[in-house]
Length: 335
Ligand code: EPU
Image (tube, rainbow, N blue to C red; front, side, top):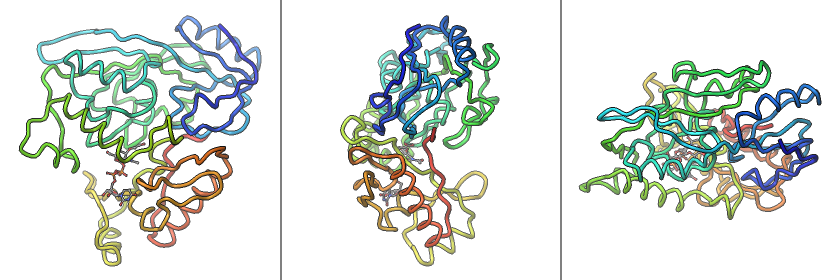
């Protein structure tokens, strides 16, 4: 196990914040997990797990042992005539995994192409895009608890998946290291093109998994800033859920309000539209701003500072609450 001291995580977080970890370890094999538990007990410091760093806002200093997950590999566990069960190590790049499944004739994840981050990060916030959430394909999540030093497997139900949420975001799982995720994929593609942009692109045309992935990549590249060019962590706020009564009320003053009916009778609003209407699209404040093409995405304008992130979050939240009466919840995880 190679331990580095006072290590700057700048290259390992897509918001490109300067953040110095007391200790930093790259975990390449599951055999090192027990060694890490011991190291953590010896140093009396907690362990923090870093995947792709694509949904994280970091502090300037981290008094912990930061573990970068680089566990690699995929394996077919079981096949039937219609489905395939694939186990994927948590450190694999998500987009590369998605594209490899399509190339191998295993379908379902095509709408989730080009999402930054790792396979292990996918269940944590139940990544979703263009009409699909990943929990639909996850059968089991395997991991290791640094606190107890034991392994554990959770079924889909036990993961308590919800919109951009799972049990892995709760304090009880803060020491849980996801080692691999099992996905049940389809051998015959069943493309989901209900999302407006996909429905429009495939109207009157046959959608294959490969073509859907291509279109999703094109739409994302058009709307969302490339993390390699403009540092960001994707959507900064969750789309808020409101009652039907609130939607009716809001539509009186905002007739073009976007709202999506939910199975429980509530409606999901587009936080990006609200932030846009509040005048924050392209707004710059300190070292950060809201992206000029998608108001839901906060961007680091260079030398971004956490205080500036927090100040802009508060300003957007206050404006949204006072103008629309709607609370916005942040989407990335703040360490
Ligand atoms: N809109 C505006 N102005 C903006 C941004 C959006 O008016 O500046 C409007 C759009 O015109 C559209 C609606 O808001 O009518 C929704 O916008 P979009 O289709 O871009 O999707 P979103 O709700 O902003 C969500 C996810 C994205 C995901 C897309 C596609 C959340 C928090 N975000 O964004 O996920 O890619 O749908 O499914 O649910 C992420 O989680 O990091 C992420 C990028």
